[in-house]
Image 1 (cartoon, rainbow, N blue to C red):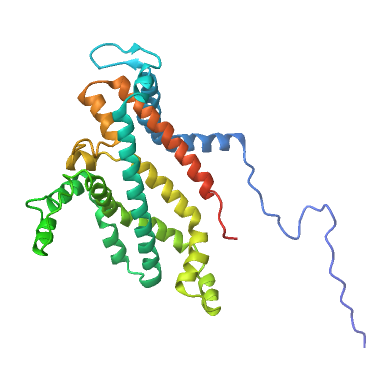
Image 2 (image 1 turned 45 degrees about the horizontal axis):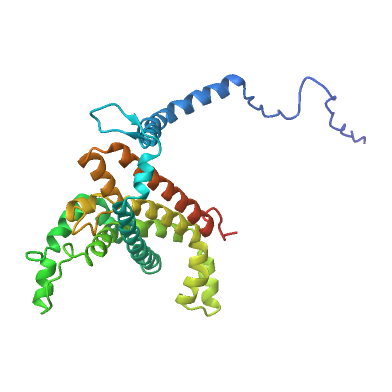
Length: 321
């Protein structure tokens, strides 16, 4: 009996017409494709770029030019060189307004940052309720003008509900917005009330990026909540906190509307912040050249503070691996 042996499988010759496996085709990027993507990107960028050029860059350049002129809207701008800046340096009201603004910024940023950080940590550690987060954000949805008017009524010395409560408790009424000592702290706390929820949610988003494993490992080692806050939360939250501080400091230096609707710079210029003084010089006394010089000075101050904050807080670095 003869057993036929099966022949070994035939191998395809190298370079044959048929391949055992077909190779995936790769799409080649051509110059035309790149040009098409560039055109599409330009279409999407165009509205934002147009807004930047029309509403930011051009007014900035125009303001810098006007700071070297005498201009009152009624006559053509007259070039005066550095006269506006010399006047600004010798203007006691300018320096007083700058000092009042710094006082406001220190109170506002100090209280707001501590309160927002505490609120963000509590939101992360104690609750995950979306409704509670929405309630925290509610004051921010109100405009500064409306918030100022509401608190102007609440804190009114004669008819305000706040002073009615103080009087009912047996204490003397407090002229919160009519006294030189109380005016700036009161305005700062009004803006803290409005912005603290938004700042807290920014910090809360930063806390969400911290791995929970670090807290669990610290608990296993016996670390307390206070120790975890200083050794884990604060170092890892530093980049987000630095950016939030830069944003809030810039916004605080530009305070205007709350002052305008509550005290109008009074009493006795106690709340005459720099933005309000600039506005009064431009639209009250039509000294647009001088107002532009003060605006340029404020731009330089804010730029210097921002660069200094960015470097001191190392906002571009993170301790996360």
